[in-house]
Image 1 (cartoon, rainbow over the protein chains, first blue to last red):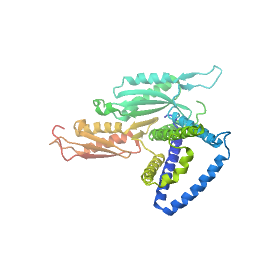
Image 2 (image 1 turned 45 degrees about the vertical axis):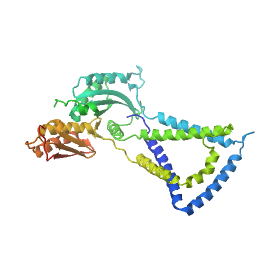
Image 3 (image 1 turned 60 degrees about the vertical axis):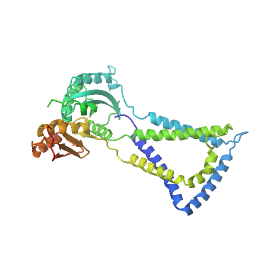
Length: 201
Length: 194
């Protein structure tokens, strides 16, 4: 439920995958077909010569370097920074505000996410069907959504858990006076597999 | 916060779809780190070259010069093969949906359930119906099927129809998405004290 840019992850991975496959496959192809390797060598030499002349066309004052090397450095640094930003943009999406009313004559009302998170957590803590629970709030496409993540005791039916949580959500909605979107995540942990089975029906 | 145009139903579908698929974050982060490393290394080589210091490995120009020799060296073939295979694997990971071992349940809210939870619940109900200890029931839940394997207690036959009925009733109750088909297998060899 986080804000990870998943299409971007996949596009970036696809590009790198394509480059790797093309590079590796290309070298393999050249190793298999000698005539092609010869032609590739000639055209590479031509391109390299052109590139060298181009780079030397903008020499640095007094040095052996070129402005183009500086430009390449800047471009690489920018690329590295963009990729760092890309890495740190993974995840996120928590929101601290559950409800904000539009500005009216009486001002605005905003409800902190903690209110709903605490109320639900307290209600869930007593239930024997659950081993653990965690409530958090995410902003999904502009809508605050409560994420109710619970760990089921061994043998408890997921429908028993949803029928237990749904009234709690309805009660929360009536307390807040507004329908809050929610997503229930029922997970299994190591204790689900090894712990004592439920005796509840 | 405002401009909320998504209906609750659409929002739930969106979350369900997202939560049952892999974000491919680990792959993307790993690849990004490798590219960053290459960028930083190249930048260091350029700076060393511009300041007249000796290169760490070789200058960018020398690397470009020696590329044809390196590519035609005998050692290049296995390296290229590994790179090509890795590239195809990365490409496949980027394109495939990457479904997680989870199901969504048909409900007013978005409900996402680990397959292990479904398996554990089915195991308890199957054990109850077969009257064996829960540890003698093994359930594996995949995207489409829930396979229940029961080891009977020696000398106590199990009625497969009763168990199948109980399991199918549970599965139908969940209204899981993608739909689950129950399969009950009673092992032919029993165990004492099961």
